[in-house]
Image (tube, rainbow, N blue to C red; front, side, top):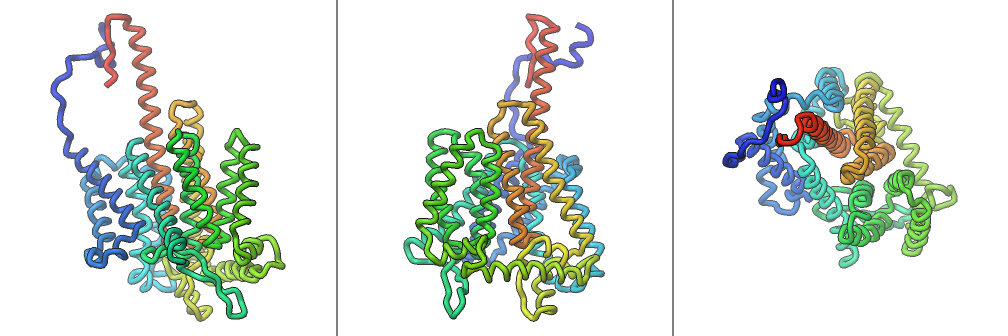
Length: 455
């Protein structure tokens, strides 16, 4: 039939299966190398095995993956057009151009660039390597598994050996223990609380109600994670978890059931808290609580950080120089307690705007994905639930960044990379759906007797 053969491939006897191409082999190798990079990074294997640390494994893995991606540059060149990528390229160009204008350019180059590079590679590796739904699922399994392990390890040490990892000053010479990361981990109590607040929305949306085994795992992990959160005494993480709870409540069709569960959790959590822990969480809402002074102190510190940033409002003091800037202005080195203040201190108001564009680009991609998921209906529950989890994590990050540094930390960049990868999977799903619909339409026109090859 004239004109149809050019647009429809009819089934032919299949030949012998072809082997995996060299590009596919390299792609598969990069994917599993990246999965190992995640394990190495989050488990801090260098701190656990000293001989292994001599190999500089994190740097070596970054170089190997980067070289592999460069060898596949022809396949990946179209992926750099994503708005999230473009906003990140703008930040990188801005940092490079303003390097000679910042307060401490030598510190940026000598001390701070490596940490920033180790953070932003999560954006590029995640976005460029995760190109299928299967890979996305494996990545989530590895990433979430690492975060859960980082919480359960110090919790196990606390229960079996009385391990705390950190402490907080109560006044009058008294201290109270706070649960931090395991001895081989590098996170303080607020960092551990951040890990818990990150893991919970993924666990809720991807496990709860997704089968008996998945639900049992979820119900087994939640009490342990929430108890660990109590032990951290991290008020910032508690507020971040409230954001996650609101997002879950807003999207749920069983709001009354969630309210009952929330009430039960509040009473249960309150019953296992010590008086010191109760006082610390009450300090969020009560000025009479003993811990209210530290809450006021944290707010004052955040205000002072913005004031410090406005001392050099245009281009800032330099990437990663917040502790150094505080030392020269206040006489003590201290990490930032607010990512937004940190942005102004290190990148100035111009860099602050560039980074906000990056965050907004991530949010816009979520909204686009959500609209496309509505068109699919219930065709892919996994992607629908993952988008809800990512959106909850996004808003949690927005709030938690008020209490946590982030410019040279991985979490915003990893979220941006997952968002790009998610969108690519949606693109493939949309193309496949359109292709199948077109094939069905053409097959109906051709009539019975012809079999359309959809391969």
